[in-house]
Length: 518
Ligand code: AHR
Image 1 (cartoon, helix red, strand yellow):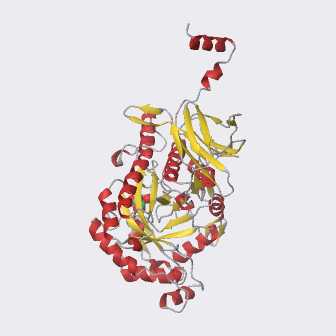
Image 2 (image 1 turned 30 degrees about the vertical axis):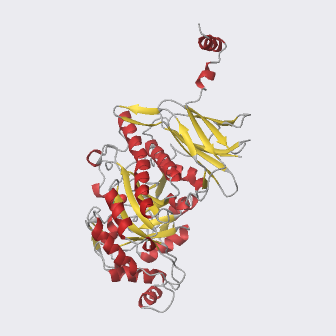
Image 3 (image 1 turned 120 degrees about the vertical axis):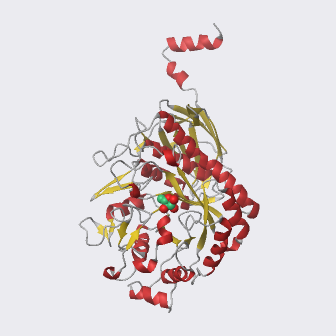
């Protein structure tokens, strides 16, 4: 018997087998003293489109509703969004944005023109939620508006006048119209997208053609007073690197604040997205592999951007991301309603960790979409509202907003199934303005706990506090209106600091944890 076997036998006899299990499964080295990149709070942004029940029934019920509301916006939703400090909200689309004519959505409700929402279910859009309602709502929530302008079917004049209506403080046709509609002072609007998916639903343009149009449209989107627009170029679909190359080459850096990127996780590809709740272990690993692909996408788009913008002045804005599955059976296929399980919570944690890693380039991101659509953080049904597992990840991760990234490296095994594999542990760390270090970890294994050694360099850890966890006993677990709290944010006591300052975290299978280290 060699020395290891002898030791193991002795430990087993002494009932110490748990000590064997405590051998670490993963190591995360955190450089607490090395960060100099701020994780912009704007990567925690959200997206609200006139699609399904995102706006109507989700955010907006109207001032006459019996559902408690603040000027027509659901009170329960406002409170939930304030709690997670949503930094920005994108509107009105999406594909809808390039068919939206903002003048139809202002003034007395009874005079507002109705339109067909051709992209999303062919339903009637009565324009009862328009510019004033959106911008007032943003003020109520305490979030920055991110407006998507219409390039696909709108004119330069229409876009220009929209900016004037929203932001000009003085005497002008559009400012006067705004005043007539009850709003004396302009709103603050910084984020402004010039078109959406211009390679697809936004006009099926070639990259060269769009770049020229962008230059023209953005010229007339003016900065009024101290309102400085952060103009965002409609960016690439997934790995269309030529699109990124063309925009960076053909648009002067001075004309853009950001360039967007859209990437959705469809586990088996667009034709085989699968169910949100009924999926195999293999599809689960495939989903996680697809989630990690975000890292490669950002790395490659960033490399192209860096050729033209080595100082990284232009932000990469991942202004649509998230999971996209088949719609729930029996629901309108045009409404994109899907359940949200522990799998989605893990996708959110992995993706946010990737955004942190690339915080020097990714300075804005918007999960799609905020309520009742795709990877939603909130579901509503009449007067009922629930928070999805993804919401709880945003709640847990809010400590990273505007904190300084602490570079880290993770050594771990892979989870594997069929042709698919993914790192078992995803990690990220940041220091907030008070110098408190926060570490977030995700254990992707479906059955095994993970013992993660967090080796913090450049700081002697003395205590762990504020530890929270999101986990489930089945990966397909989700919240329903009958059991709204099946998955929630709970306290966690599995992170301990040793005398050596190393934090050992014993994570259950399928879990995400965050804790503070002092
Ligand atoms: O989020 C749903 C749709 O996905 C958006 O409208 C569009 O931009 C993207 O294709």
